[in-house]
Image (tube, rainbow, N blue to C red; front, side, top):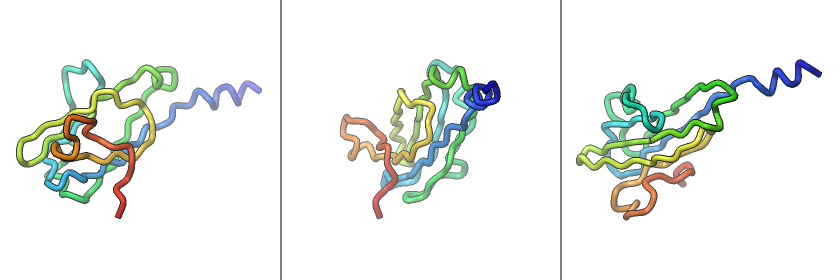
Length: 115
């Protein structure tokens, strides 16, 4: 039915639950489209303490969602900045890692921290 087709075109919201598992405070957190000139607001607010989390949502038109790639960039209070530059439009938990834990590998994990 025509209504079913319309429903599938409804935009879904991307939701990233970002956990700070770096061992220190995250002072800056940005999620922006690759190539954007403006990073947008600092999503860490007054700072995201170790162990805390923040939910970031994005809404993009349904027909553009497959083409969107985000950069997730974060800075810890020791001044170390890391970025993950191929984040897709999806709903996923993300754990931020310390520079030492990342050790040249990816600075995030697509998982909630294990307690």
